[in-house]
Length: 137
Image (cartoon, rainbow, N blue to C red; front, side):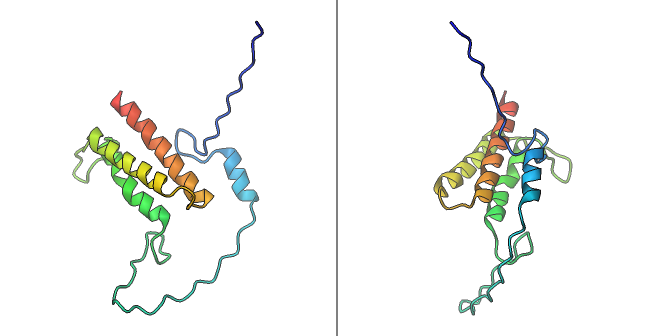
């Protein structure tokens, strides 16, 4: 029998420390900046409701804001963050619930995300799942 050589290539965008890998940094620098479209004025509000400003300060909330709101409690429930009074809130069942909510969002948004949004969500799901597995033993 002949032995076949197997090559394994790590295609993740981020290192274990959460840093962007060198090959992705280089690709991002090589891309020409896209021209920013001129914002259109918001339509006249008939309901009296004005959209809240997103965490990016860019007006309406983005997909990244939505994902961040869902993902924010995960590190707290995995025991990686502490409350302001120093207490830990580790609860792996609740952490799993929030990870599952991100998966539902991923499934329901298939085909509707641009590549940057899709990569962000996929990478976040990968990292949170790996951390969950580490904590649950």
